[in-house]
Length: 517
Image (cartoon, rainbow, N blue to C red; front, side, top):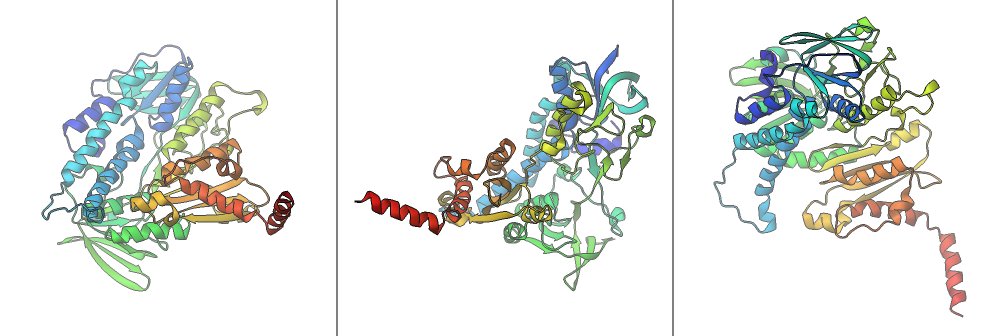
């Protein structure tokens, strides 16, 4: 592994050594090749791993190529380490708030950031077995470690440490993902900065942290580091935080982040960075005021760049642009024998999106349908997502503005958590469930939940939307009490009540009067 890549798995401790032994073993010997592969998969992130393992389980001959760390962003620098950090930060916050629950914490309680990060690395290493080279070999996948490049219409060359291998394929899948990039802020490169690819290597807590970008990554890490004890300054070019979410939903999260100690500079303009004796200096104009901020580290939480370099895509007629590889709704590239999945071609930069797209690639690459009839398509995907702040924001389907743009009339209902018993008892009653139902039917077109466990709770709406079932199903479903998920039924009950008209009530009153005779 190159020195540039090794820095992403610092520090050099037992946990990271175990991680590397699983996902980039130094003694790995690439297999000899013989015959044509049904599918050659380039990139062993989520999309590549799922494509390879399903194809192999079906009996296909499969090759999987990875030049860096198997598991991709999710395992190494994304979902897994970030959720470990978020959980530790929440534990610290719970200790500080324990007085409200009758727990008296004596003064002088010690917090150990290094230990929290070590726990994250230990758990990441434990999970890494699932994505390991040896495990995938045992599942029937030919695993190659090295640089992949298309060398001809049906050939991929792998440049490995012990020499090159030529892999002949019937079909190929590009699953190389994307990487962090930074906006062109003057002085940022010279001063140095962290991204999601390097922040999890920290072993000491920055006393002052600047975060650029109030999207999901920026908000999750800003809140976590503030809870650890950093003085966090969050800079966002647009108004508020999480600009893609509904404003009242994002505002609830912002209020909690503010209580946690995050200072927001939104509508930020003319951002500049320079190195100073006291640290790294950030200047920004926000709402007509000029701010001069000194921090110890800067975390950039915006910007992704597709990993298309060095693949020889031009050789095989695969078109791409600044957002990634161009695909159709069945995930074929402009070369019909080559498919793509995951962050390299998707607007949804989620692990579960990559998983779903990998299964579409399997169906279309290994089981082609004549004349395109019955093929698997991305147009049928129901894609939920969640930002893991506290509280969480989860969403699926359309927002109200999306429905209006598509000419769909909807009725919108919102039920607040401060009327849900379990949320009140848990001290987690800031938030709501909101549902958009197509007018004249019970069809759910979208839902948003702001709650401590919103990411879990949104799945009920996702299942119904995928199954083509509507609000009546939730209304007729018994929800266990007391749970926060009751809010899903309570918001649907608002819709049901709204459709119980005065005319219906009058008719029932006449019926009941007749029955009393």
